[in-house]
Length: 146
Image (cartoon, rainbow, N blue to C red; front, side):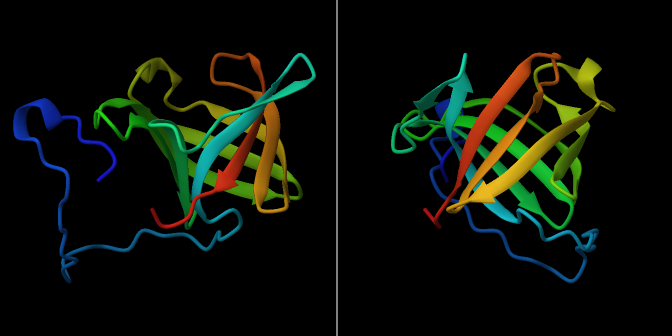
């Protein structure tokens, strides 16, 4: 595991989950951008600033079958900083999120965020407005199976 919100109490660093026949598949057929992405940079006032993805503090976004979740965590301390997620779709260069949960501010649940996006050299570039209405211009890199 890379984070455990209860680490101070249980010190668990690994966990095994067994899939059973009781699980229900709720997936959609949207494989565009499918995968694990880690924030690797952002533009501020036209200047690109990289974010070292080997440092312990990470923001990761997982997209699979029409659903997304972002997670902020620290791999050294196993501390969890926040998360949010919901449904997403991609349509002609647009990446659209519909927030269904947000650990830091539940007033954002139900918001729809529209971004322009493109993938270049295995990096995902997207621009738009954050859930707070502020402009963002982020770069996400595909995450290997760490």
